[in-house]
Length: 241
Ligand SMILES: Nc1ncnc2c1ncn2[C@@H]1O[C@H](COP(=O)(O)OP(=O)(O)OP(=O)(O)O)[C@@H](O)[C@H]1O
Ligand SMILES: [Mg+2]
Image (cartoon, rainbow, N blue to C red; front, side, top):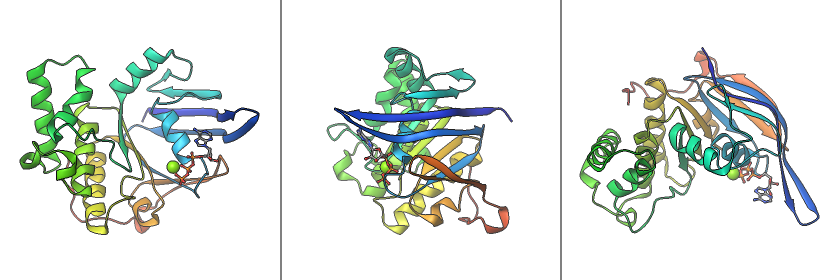
């Protein structure tokens, strides 16, 4: 299968005055279309830095990044934002929902940048919320929802854009085990329907639900191994999403 993500000698150096932090020191890997990958590593190892680069929220200091065969590392800010809007769905640990908007409006918002008309936007957002089991909560604001429900809204928002790749940074990090499992189940469902998913996690159990674990340490890949089917954790029957 074609690689949807490929990085070559990818580096990110943060410069703060005279101080330089080499957060990523030259990464090389590829992710084939449809794969579900976990990124693990200690705090400060560069996981979020990597995810931000893959999500076109940031630009590499050196090296190359190809998304869907297209080099995105050197694009202008506008072009980068466009790639992000079209191809990437992001899910963050703290949900990143706008508090003054309802669940439905939060899911609809990114679709504005996709050039969809109002009716189409509403329909897609309603479908996405229904898919994550929140049709009934669509007029609630984030603070009127539990953490797990807020995260499901954020998964719906990522899903509604029909992205090529879904990137998640500690999506279950703030959730209790039951809500965390519900959210993980959504990712497994998205994977089952063929989406490419990259999920940063501290939780070995979450990682063992994926097909591959990439481990970072000090900005380098120190291990990159498939999770054999025999040791893979499952949540029973998962429906496509
Ligand atoms: N905006 C920034 N400016 C300067 N340094 C940064 C910035 N963001 C991250 N860093 C540094 O880069 C390194 C990697 O940080 P990163 O946030 O990618 O780690 P992480 O693996 O996501 O850690 P955690 O598990 O705690 O979320 C750390 O040394 C961090 O201090
Ligand atoms: Mg992080």
